Length: 122
Image (cartoon, rainbow, N blue to C red; front, side, top):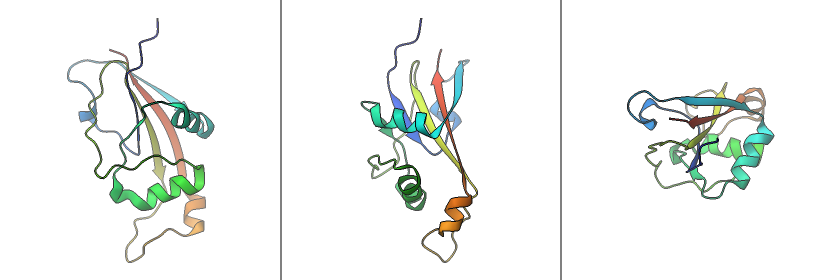
């Protein structure tokens, strides 16, 4: 029997302190972009845990994938419990911007994006 879903969070990263203490089981599924966008669009009560200081990456997310979620003033503290899910958009290949304020179209096109859905099972 599938665990009842409590909350779904969406962010760019994952940290150990998001998960409960002790021994737990976490299931991770790779998602296509379409699957991730469908969850984001359809999930009632989705909690965006994006850091507003990552505005440039947020802009890339919006432009490239059409993902538009409310950005909190501060990234919330995430404390997952049984049944919660964390949808992560991993980004690699975008350089650190030093002395610039935006990515070039070529940098965005060459970046790699990967979606993973983590579910706390126990």
